Length: 363
Image (tube, rainbow, N blue to C red):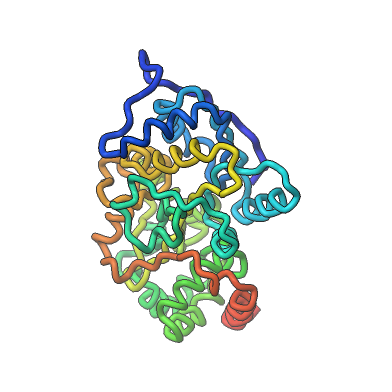
């Protein structure tokens, strides 16, 4: 991902210099908005693309039309490294951090770098999505099964990893070399695979011992395109937000199927928090509230992220995916949130997993 610094134009509600405080927010919120107006621009470090922020910026600027929102778009792991380097050298840094990188959040939690802001929106979210005061999950992206309908007849389409391993073992002529997923030896792929292994234990390794030698690792865009064209028959642990958005194209939906993994679906969590070093701390809190609000979640859901908020439906996000929809299909007990876990982020755990996975691949 390119390093880009961009500014999105402030958008105020027509005829309103200052919008009303949202219903149910504390009376002190007016004073917080007033302070935010005098802070200067809001700088966000993020691994979300600019288009995914457009709705949130509009909502933010309806409350704070004077505040310019700036974004530094970085790869997930680069965000934490840059922030820590800037803080260590006394340089200005992010006012708000949004990333899926587990190590970033583990480091910030362990060193008490997160502003312990209690959002008025927090009460509707599950406790596991707020692992530290001030750290919130703004999106929960399932990693699903995706397949080419022309290549796999209905009786060859799995609904679980266990069934996929069974089908692949019985039909290597169909699946060998035509399965894809993220590289399990890179951070993003590791997170999904290791969370699944932690969920199932040795049983998961039995399945991966079958699947890994048959699998060709790839990235999100290539997996989507190559399943569509038939180069791959099936992808597992596929980032479903982008896929669901692509499947709004009827022509692609005729070819590509997408479904949750019934024996355990990894969920990538996108965390957001304001560092204690923020130069615009009140503006950062307002943006957090926007992202957690129902309208903010809808804006993210329309742009390939998966709303976690339970009162957002697929209809609200124009047919996009929601966390609640996946829960309804496979049950909460089969959801595997990839939490911001220090053990998962440790080098020792990563190295041990990679060694075992390479054993499974035979490479």
